[in-house]
Amino acid sequence: MSKSAYEKRMFIGNNKNYHHLLTFDQGKDGSIYCSFPTFKNIIWQTISNENGTYAIKSETAENAGKLSIHGNGRIHISEYGPSKKYQLILYGNRLRSEENKNNGVRHLFTIFPQEQYCIPPNSPAFSRSKDHVLNFEQMNPFVMIFFAVPVMKNYNTRIQLIFHTDDLQDPQQPLLGYDKIRLRNHDIIWLCYKPKHFDKWPKKKHTYVIMMDLMLLCTLELKSVRMKNSDA
Image (cartoon, rainbow, N blue to C red; front, top):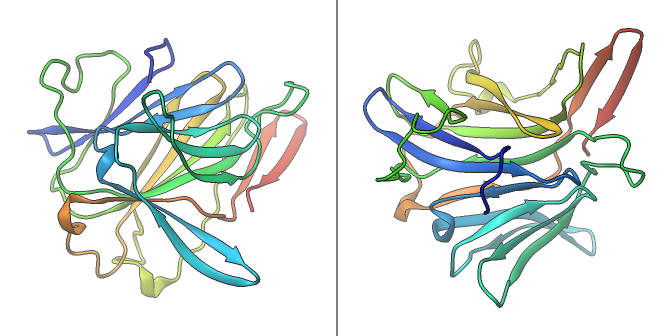
């Protein structure tokens, strides 16, 4: 991923070591790009529908690469290099309208990360002013959900997620944290939670990135205008 003024790195740590989880960037056409230092360890998952039969589809990459979520709604995972091998080509809500006048809302991906990430030796956390750092008192297995919401003035964002209480470690306090990362045209809103029985990190240092249709109700309140968008 090339460096730009909108590139944002995300780190996670516990007051001692801050691991580089991923990096976001966004192009003029609304496309969002995401790179991972542990790209080759990622298991990419989605739900396929073949003749009415649903199944989990998994892919891996042999080389380093990036996740591209284009403004036209097309998603693909590509490896760096001349071959540019594409995997898991999907489609979803547009991040940018065909007329290039409006920005869209969508779920980007859900991640169950590995225990060890990456500590850049020459550029650790806080070495760049735009680094986004999450600090936990104790590092335990967790899941993060990422959404893209358009950047607009005078608006409030409300995300409605429905969990089954049997799937949560603490139904009374389901979220471990949440925040946003500002890009060129969108805010990346992330939510972190701990599912029940997630007491161990993924085996073999795998990171699971899940891309599927999640129902998202995002209400944007702009003075006298109210718009509702759903990512389904």
